[in-house]
Amino acid sequence: MTRWLLWLASGLLLGGIVHFATILYLPSTATQNAYARISAISPVNSVVALPAPSAEKSVLPLMDPAFAAAVCRYDLREAPLKLTAPVSPAYTSVTFYTNKDVAYYAINDRAAGRRSIELDLMTAAQKAQLPDDEEISAADRLIVESPTQTGLIVIRALASEPGMMPAAIASLSGARCQPQAQ
Image (tube, rainbow, N blue to C red; front, side, top):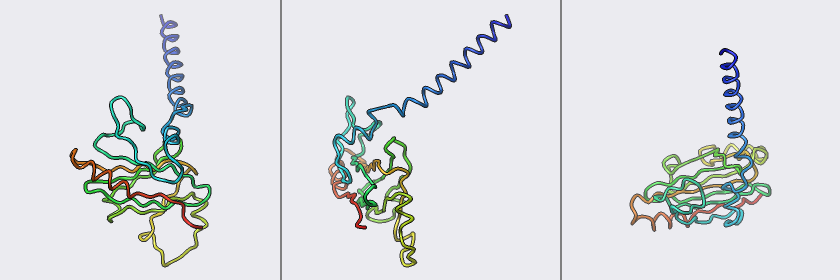
């Protein structure tokens, strides 16, 4: 009886280890992640409005139909990026993802405290090349360090009621992500 329980416990432990390893490995083997799907519809370093999600089809996973969304597929190999996103009447958020769908930074209109969200996106090496200028303080210039050279910026604007969706879409149309001049 004890031997049978030992085999059962060993089998359960081995099965748990295999299951856990598989769950951790599968996302890295996915070929149709969000970055790959956005690559088909968005040029590099420009903002593209995403179609409204439906029950049958959605460009990105877990999209909320109460939000208008736009995306910028960025590439920082040539130069840092300047992002400007006007805020909508209700709520605006900007989320940064690596090319492997890992979120690494987010900001909303309340945290920005202005009529638009403005920031510079760059790699750690590009940030290290910035001159130490005492006239430009951290409060004047928000700098976000990207852990990868490519990724996604998702901009969302809330339509607090269905009639507000055109205003949310209009606010996203003013969003820009452009390479900075070196």
